[in-house]
Image (cartoon, rainbow, N blue to C red; front, top):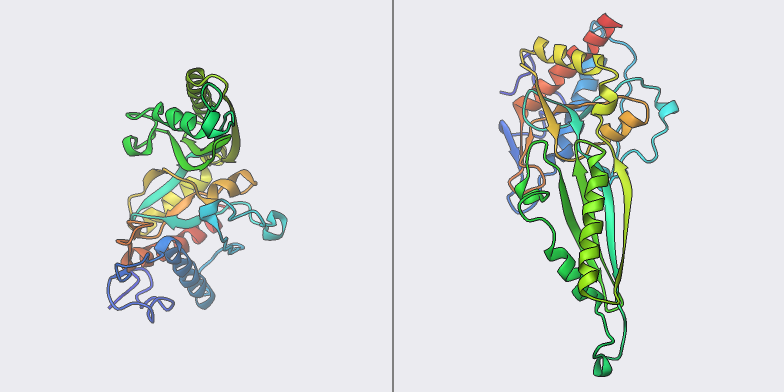
Length: 303
């Protein structure tokens, strides 16, 4: 029997979709709990609010955003039409976690330009851009600034794609850190390594370009501390000890924060995300609904 501790009834939105306390996929594909779990929680919250008029709350707006994983989730959001001052995303993981900071992110490309010549008569003429780029990649730090060797608040420089040919070759990177100013340092590191690479292959040249993707929402939330404080109060009313966590990734909440709506992230119970072992706890999803109901009341009381 699945019950909401607060509501003393089965979750009306989830009851036809579950057979046990843990939801998994077959093991052959992704479950997609990121972020089907968030959608289910939001819809259950909406149903509870609509069917329980005694719950006091202010104006509540619901927003669904697509394509978060490719950074386009809020591109078309009309903030004036949405008309919300503060928000919360339902996209987190472990029960009781509350995420109010995330990576700042840049995309960066390193292009190497070589010198073309007929391969039959290339001696002392040809400079193969692919070989220069390959050497450049060997210069990347192995024991720091790499996703494989970093954790917590440590940032990284990560190559995500390579393409090219004889005359031109390119490596695309993502740069990540919780301190936005460090992204400039990471770009400079790539530039210094590119200089070292072309120094070995005379006649080649390089180009490094960085593009802003998103920034750490903590920069906005620190100016609006009540957004996190009210969420923590809602957790406590739901008999949870809130655990502030950082996100080693991005979230639409970060971009929404910089669009004028401070927006931290509330847990959903999804675990092992983006893997075939992904699962979600029904109890955690129900608890997240309870948190949302309490959160709506906290804002009403304190506004």
